[in-house]
Amino acid sequence: MPHHDLVIIGTGSGNSLVTPELEGLDIAIIEEGTFGGTCLNVGCIPTKMFVLPADRVLEAEDSARLGVEFTAPDVDWPAIRERVFGRIDPIAAGGEDYRRGQDFVTVYAAHARFVGERRLALAGGEEVSADRVVVAAGSRAIGLPVDGLREPDPARGLHTSDTIMRLPELPPRLLVLGGGFVGCEFAHVFSGLGVDVTQVQRSAVLLAKEETEVAKRYTALAGQRYDLRLATRVVAAHRTDAGTWQVHVEGPEGPGVVEAEVVLMAVGRRPNGDRLDVAAGGIATDENGLVVVDGQQRTSAQGVWALGDVSSHWQLKHVANHEARVVAHNLAVAFGRTDADPVESDHRFVPHAVFGHPQVASFGPTRAQLDASGTAYVSKTQKFGDVAYGWALEDTSGFLTVHASPVTRRVLAAHCIGPHASTVIQPLIQAASFGQDAHAVARGQYWIHPALSEVVENALLGLEFP
Image (cartoon, rainbow, N blue to C red; front, side, top):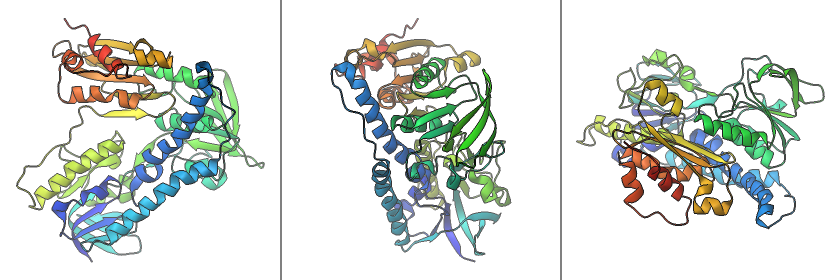
């Protein structure tokens, strides 16, 4: 049985653990899928590359009110798809070739499961062990607990985010099940490219975890673009002899049927700890199946760390990257490659963004969460259209809400919807992370005029502290 100094399970953020400090150790990397993980191959990067052409279509449609008109777009889906994966697929292959070329790294292309303390069985019968193990195996898209929709079946037009981007051609109709960020981004992409989209959401708004006013605004705008079924649940589904899907739903107007050639199930993801049988390795999981870790990303098993979607409820690449840096440092400490002390992950101000149309970005608690916790706060909502560049854009829907402590005058949270929201919010993440006084941030630096960042300046200045 091969024994290694370190075994890493997963090549998303796990691949970045092989730092210069660890060179020369006997390191094994186990990957059963495509090298590079979810973000590179089926997540953040390709989805945003698909968002770009959809954005361009909507911008062209909107340009008439600015005095510029374009003809109807001619969408070449195969060219769009090949532009995306013609760039991404070589990166995945190159990453694997690079690791295989390192003489101190062994790559196992196999599924693994724990069979003991830091001991793993690989598909095919081989077993490996290690002094230390990092579990970075990610998560997987799931189906609905409804007959016909329990498991994806791409060959029959039943997709998750893992396969929908590889469609050979655009379908006439697409049914999106789910109103979270994955469902909203793909509804935006396909409706923007001319597909007849229906989106079914069981709650009364899309993006229900966002600040209430942000969720309401996004929902209203989405409902102007495509068929949106809110407060609606799926009760049954079947594929017809004609090759379409008929999905039976129940909503405010009673029972109904939605028919489409392709169905996208965007209803959540499940951490992959169960597929690794982590319990057999002495690794505890919580009620949601997440591997339990402490501040240093250590699991309940001696010598085993975990990071990313397999242990994090955020399921965000930038969180996984942050945790990977923490684990890499702590591995260097464990292997005696540095005299520094172990460090802990900082999850105080974790931001996220939804690349729909318009964009949504947020970090920190919502108003409802602050109220429920009894936290004192002051707020300011700044409309995009009330600053110079937002006025030039003639934006009527974007806004930024900032919550701050009346005691410390520090930013607690920010929630944004509008053009470039994912970029606009970044100065507020910095202010919160470094504990800066909100008014000092606004007045202690120049803000480019007339830039959209003045939304942040004005929001901070509008906070009324006692």
